[in-house]
Length: 350
Image (tube, rainbow, N blue to C red; front, side, top):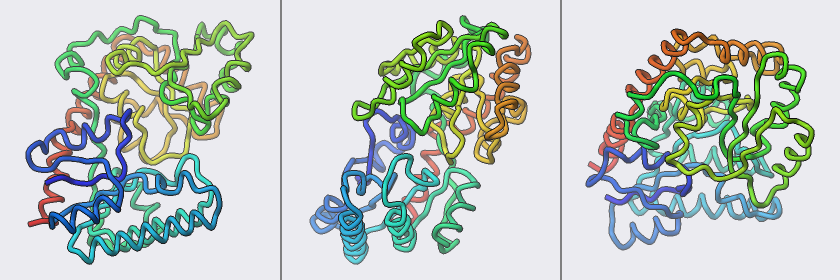
């Protein structure tokens, strides 16, 4: 059965991992609610799986336009359900990273939760936020862990046979799309030249800037006199990503408000120690041996403490963390999580 997914981002391996074990049973197809309605009217039985519901509001120039688009989306979803369709919604974020009209968005989210046949959460913190925002019927909420990316960016055999020793052990690596919510300007402020020089550290920021934002230019201007910062602004080819992250002494997540992080999952999956905020989702994701690398959100001193601790890990300490990462990544391997999703779909259509 084809499952219409709203939406699928082409540069995000999430759906590849999510459906990796469902070939021949459920095939993901990118599409909107109008496509889902057309297909159920022509073909019958159909699942519409909503991800990142804010996507339908992104191009709205005014609040009234956003309200109209939201109302249209909800009305079409109800039509889809009346025709016999099933709706699944996955909660990915607390709130969209960049979006105007948050009140319209939250109204849309509440309507989706009310209509959905299944509500999927990737961690337990999401359940708390979900109840605060939408008060769902608890009988339709399912816990489906975010799949790891083990075997997605490189063969899992290569990941397991990697060397624990980084080739750039004093490098602090930031990775991912260069977007304002990622906190990269704060990273530069919190790790000034005096700090990096004192600890023999350099920074590397790798990722593709948004073409519609001049944020990358602002960061470049901020680093004009900093020889300790390497701005690697580009779309990093997927095959280069694992080694890029493992080369560094640590990977840093300087942003603090999120439910799930693709970069955190990626670090776990390729064995690259991560310095991340000490939040419930990160404590749930990372094994206990790596919790020493979590920092108190908003605490610059503790952030610096975690950076130094990660950079100064002994070979044995690093190997223990990497081993624990890969055991957790194996438990969250895409095929296993995908199988759980298949059972959720089965219960809806059988």
